[in-house]
Amino acid sequence: MTIETSASTEAARAQIGVTGLAVMGSNIARNFARHGHTVALHNRSVAKTDALLADHGDDGDFVRTETIEEFVAALQKPRRVLIMVKAGDPTDAVIEELAGAMEAGDIIIDGGNALYTDTIRREASLRERGLHFVGAGISGGEEGALNGPSIMPGGPKESYEALGPLLESIAAQVDGTPCCTHIGPDGSGHFVKMVHNGIEYADMQLIGEAYHLFRDALCYDADRIADVFTEWNAGDLESYLVEITAEVLRQKDAKTGKPLVDVIVDAAEQKGTGRWTVKSALDLGVPVTGIAEAVFARALSGSRDQRAAARGLASGTLGDKPTDAAQFTEDIRRALYASKVVAYAQGFDQIAAGSAEYGWDVTRADLATIWRGGCIIRAQFLNRIKEAYDADPELPSLILAPYFREAIESGIDSWRRVVATATMLGIPVPGFASSLSYYDGLRAERLPAALTQGQRDFFGAHTYERVDSPGKFHTLWSGDRSEVVA
Ligand code: 6PG
Image (tube, rainbow, N blue to C red; front, side, top):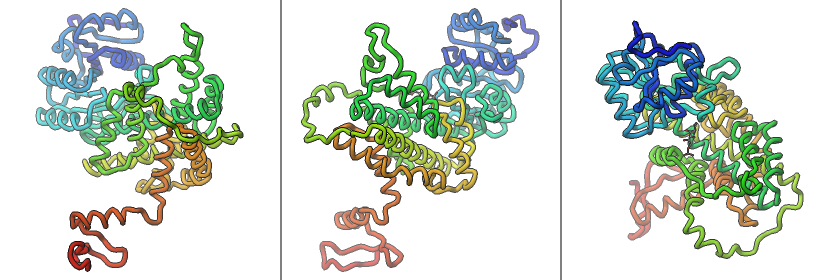
């Protein structure tokens, strides 16, 4: 261990600086130090810096600094500073302070969950000042930050030459491949992290619906449901979220002895990245129905007053509970897998649309590769997604890749049974149901959108296309109802 104050440092020697030493920032700084890098530390209040050094100074080489000037002076050139502060105004304030002390060619990395449009703005403004700005999505929570996160850096390609090896050294590794790669210019890193979080919401919602069905349709207790998730985690559904679901379900409350999940208030909160994903999808015109349902399901769960007022509303006549528990369990497993594929397919569609809109040239197979480890949505089946996009980078939809198509087609009957049974039992399954509707919509020979077009033409002369001749047409609805070329 070496801890120096910048005053005692003869030469600037830190390879990286981290400012913002709350849990995520501290853990990333420690991760860099553990990988042999000298890390300059800075925090608005020095107490946090000192606490980190007192508790974890043994992790490696740190340089303690108090002011931004000391911090910047401690860094080797080109200087690399990772900001780990709250998204929004606090990030702008730190960037401004740093930019004033840094020189052309230096690199500022924002590792927070920033809104990608903010990142686009910041990158453009710092570029004008000769600085590189890298918006880097970082996933994996506190544990990942310390032991290997998945990192999604955007920003100028040339900055990745100086930054990539550092980031790759602390990222999770899968089969010897780091879970970090350059995503594309300006806001692309934060955009893909945002969609990652949207997929995370959808995945959690689907798992929640499976849990709900076990609880209320099969009347399983939390331990028994945990056993099912543990078993599933040994197969196609193997993933971090399925794994931790079993752990959460097995946890007992110290105070009551009940399963913890039974004493937690059933109102899900959200910090905003799921909402951002849906807003962006609306602008891009991409139907991310699974993600949207997940965001709205959280909002509904949190509408406590309305829920209290609505609690006595009639259910109507409910159906019978399933009698073959083994069959229904297998049905839920297949429905979960198929709905999950839809959620990922929609998320990857949004990334393709965002990439086209902003000219980022994001490679979807690369994303699948770096999401295999470190991040919250890491899952065995990301290997399959990677293979699918490797085989066909222009794949129109993930559900058309032979592996996923087979998985969905062989599970379709189960999927329908689960949605029908849930509906007959009055158990809400917005994720399962909307994914199934999306699937049916996508594969439909003919959608009712023809009628929508007719209605639009009726009240607004918005015109329509015909199935048998090119061009746009309009019917003279308030005249003799003949058709004219528009
Ligand atoms: C990650 C997580 C992380 C955070 C979410 C939580 O990838 O490490 O996604 O970013 O835990 O933002 O989001 P909500 O509070 O909105 O659920």
